[in-house]
Image (cartoon, rainbow, N blue to C red; front, side):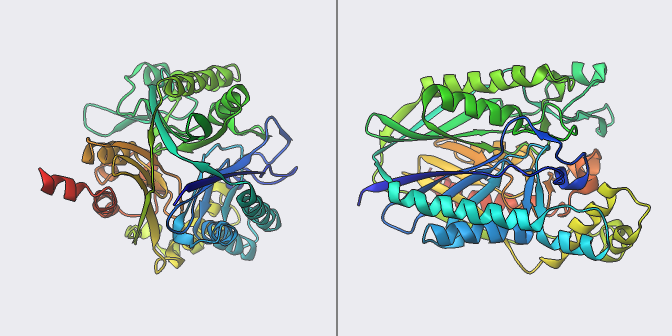
Length: 435
């Protein structure tokens, strides 16, 4: 049976005064460049698969599930066959419907304009549905990779005592922190493309790094990764989608002081890697693909400060900062959804080209571990799916300290659960048995 691909996009730029980054920074005061929801629908011998990336900060819990269900209905498939992600720029909306209900009840500053959110969901689903009428056959996939130079650095700079000495944020001005080594990163941007024989149809890019150069000024932007994606599209006229990899502990902080002049510099470094990955792309014929998914339940934090009681107190405190109150609402929303699992997905071509789709702000260690599990295959990784748990550190990171464990909503036991699930989806154990 021939394989088919449809492409869709939708403008999801927020209106004037809409909250940005969950209400923690200045709301919309203008638009530097539009935000988009970009995706592809793939189908062959089984039900369609939808892959979509949205230029928002995050989609959590019910907000993720509602958007995913709408795309599934539009593409005539099951929600479990939709992988929905965010790119994570910060001058952008952040959606959690349960948290917003709690915030409204507490009369705290708004996290999200719910009417605008549902409009984006409706229009994105309509775009996906309309795209099916223009589907084209694809006969080949392409794979390419290139090193991204002087963008990513590990946010967590450890001291001699094994504890976090510096938290290297997206914009870092501290000279000692910037002079520290890059630390553990995945330096490669990987590109998966779809072709009708020798004609390129769409390209999906994967790279692990927080995508912010500067933010907080009320100027909406997809920032340097979104701008690189658009620049490459304008040059090639090939549909482009950008997925953020496991960039939970990765920023541009070593190479970025937050000045506005740095945004186009970082954009062009990502763009250069896209060009190089495209240039060295090799194609192979494909007859079909497999889609696997595994539901997981990640345990909540056990510390008293993460309890529902403490979170309710913080949310009700009218003197507490907006970020603290909204974080408390996000924590309560996470606790309320504990009976609902999170899916981890895998797209498999010939058991040789594997794309792993993860939830939350996963640390880069998960991406590197996935690649190590299948050294015989090409493995791309997208994170920032269902963002209910927020950061997904490694177990040892909770002992090292630093920023991420102070707001991560899932406990350190999550690492073993995720690694076991990744191994199963990549069929790494089967490969080991064949040796």
